[in-house]
Amino acid sequence: MLELRTNRGREGGPGARAKIWTVSETTADTTGQQPPARRGAAYDSAFLRACRREPVPHTPVWFMRQAGRSLPEYLKVREGIPMLESCMRPELVKEITLQPVRRHKVDAAIFFSDIVVPLKAIGIDVDIKPGIGPVIADPIRTAEDLKRLRNLEPDDVPYITEAVGLLVDELGSTPLIGFAGAPYTLASYLVEGGPSKNHENTKAMMYGQPELWAELVDRLADITSAFLKVQIEAGASAVQLFDSWVGALAPDDYRRSVMPASTKVFDAVAGYGVPRIHFGVGTGELLGLMGQAGADVVGVDWRVPLNVAAERVGPGKALQGNLDPAVLFAPTHAVETKAREVLHAAQAIGSSGHIFNLGHGVLPSMDPDALSRLVAFVHEASAR
Ligand code: 1CP
Image (cartoon, rainbow, N blue to C red):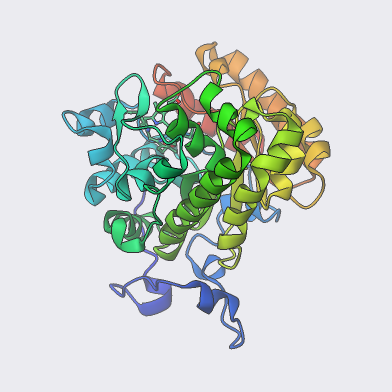
């Protein structure tokens, strides 16, 4: 069982409400006050230390999509509750977020939500259909459609603030990662109307109506920034910007049509001082640019070894990844051999600055025990 500690004690004594920080407090550091990332109970956790490229007692590990999917206890508490509705129930969000931390002993929790939650919160008709993913009733394809994308206000998502607050109180020294979808990936759902293999409509707009496209991703950057700010101000100690499908683009198109919007998001949350992680699938050719967009940590999928990724990203950034998720279906000895290869390749980054993860998310049919064994193995094999 996870030992549930409170982070309230340090600042205000047991029972005191965790302090909610604002950007002005964290950037106007004239009083010698430190930003929240330095004050939180998780500040010295292996995960946050690795994000800052500081020495760690062991390589920290967590898994993208660790909350939900493969866990029987998740399927049980979600029974009969539609996905998006479950994201709006703070007690349920807290329970689902904690489940993989208790079970696998991972070094960080990822907030249970979805990248389309902020879109739903501003009134977009979106649903998450079982076995499909997000489906948008009226796709956004014209300047008129764009008017439906208004800014997100904190009051639109009170359940997020509440759930994050509940979680940081329970998690104590275990960091909570907040997240959002990056402008390109969100745009791909909005323009296509749902999951898409080739992103035809998205690219047609990007190439054929560059001004409309720029306006779309700029608006999404503002919505995403607002969504991340809500999570940070409520106590998240790191954020991950998922650009899952941006690997569909060539570097020049990324630089011209996507990078300005992603940079806007990273700039918007820079003042908080919490580590910013950036991840996409199939982004081997984009790793350098994705780092330059403003990430402190670059997520790498399994197609590029971490030592090669380190060269592409350049100095000054931590790396996260990158075991092929499918390896988890092999016998334990094979999982350990492949995990050791990841740890070896990561040594190229230096003695610190690596967060172990999968190259993409946990798959629904994965054996949860295999994930728990992998966490223990990474901790043991990397112990300094
Ligand atoms: O009913 C269900 O259980 C639905 C399955 C599910 C879950 C558990 C969806 C639908 N979303 C989620 C939660 C979720 N989504 C989390 C939870 C925290 C964790 O990581 O454990 C996170 C981080 C996401 C983020 C997300 N949603 C991404 C980026 C991460 C990634 O995997 O690349 C994307 C692309 C989505 C869209 C989405 N939502 C759900 C599905 C099945 C999809 C992908 C659909 C597609 O293939 O396009």
